[in-house]
Amino acid sequence: MSTNDNNATIAQPASSISADGVQSISAQTTGFTFNHTMLRVKDPVKSLAFYTGVLGMTLLAVKKFPDMEFDLYFLAKLTESERDNLPAGDDLEIFAFRQRGILELTHNYGTETKADFSYHDGNQDPQGFGHICFNVPNLDEAIAWFDKNDVEFKKRPEDGSMKNIAFIKDVDGYWIEIVQADLMS
Image (cartoon, rainbow, N blue to C red):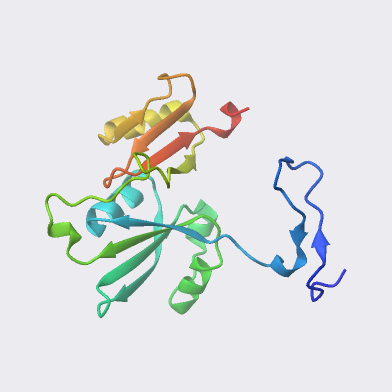
């Protein structure tokens, strides 16, 4: 099969889940990478402190657009090896946009000074965006870490009918699901 053929498809993996609407993969999408999700934040200093200090993410790129009055911050949760071998300069920005699972924080100038300003978290009417998710190696240890850092919980693992899943809130009230992969089956 040639990837230049606009009608060429690749079968979904046999072990993947099938559901109504799932189609074969277009060969035209070979090389596509889901790179990032964007959240608007009120105060980038507070948000960066939360995502780097509490969730251990690394800031990989900052794009400033003063004429349009907004800045973009791109963060990733890197492995130790990735942190040890992180490129620098322009190569770091290229690295950032080749990754999976990047979080983009968008700050519109002036929101940080408005006491009554907040963004819609997507979980009240009208519903839309719901949450992002972090897998942790040990759910109990992660919960203790969040408690130590005074993180607000939407749902603790023992609450409700969905056990072994927590939801915390970031400084803007966005929900973050916390799971331990081997407890999800």
